[in-house]
Length: 245
Ligand code: DDQ
Ligand code: CA
Image 1 (cartoon, rainbow, N blue to C red):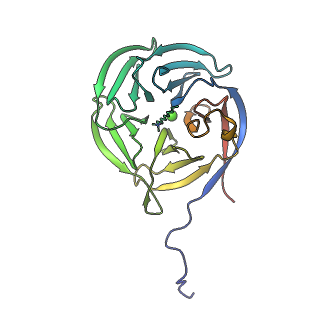
Image 2 (cartoon, rainbow, N blue to C red):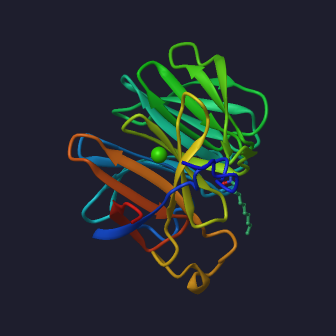
Image 3 (cartoon, rainbow, N blue to C red):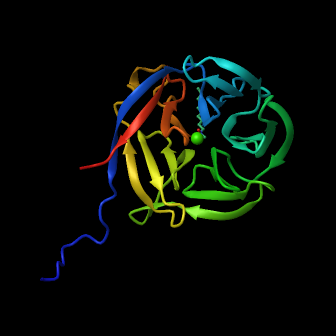
């Protein structure tokens, strides 16, 4: 067979679509910055100075069943559960908070350099985004950085990595102010798929279309349910991914 000199160096990154499985109510005052699912409930972190919180939410009703409010100058960001704790980042305060997961009572603070955007976990590692193409890998016990994942798509760095979720061996990351989620191979940092969620919600109809963007991914590993929402969105969606043909 003749050598195909015109063959592309990289195969195109597959773009996944979605179907909607369920719609659930979502608090339109929740400027969603962190989201995960655990034992039948969603846990959500909300941002904005004076409106930041960490809360436990009933999936079916969207009702807040438990919450802790943050001090007025603190901007809440990513959250993750680790054993019986919940860990939360702040945007530009360089402070993380450790809570008791059951009571949502704060236990202690820790510090980190740079911005804090999102958190997720796998085994004893936490993965943290800060808006740059470099995800930080933290030791979940010490909260110290032990590595970095440089995220690229077709060899180019991917900026504005925001809300994260570990799903079946991949890191899913919302791209801030875009309608896409990147599927990242944690071993290489390569984006191995995109999920295009344009059309899920007409963001232009929200009060602040530039800020009220897609952000929030939660995975119920046991029932294999994928949830997505956005900042101040009226709806949280359970979606199923559709592979490109
Ligand atoms: N982050 O999600 C990208 C980490 C932070 C977004 C902060 C957006 C602030 C908007 C402020 C608007 C004031 C009306
Ligand atoms: Ca998440």
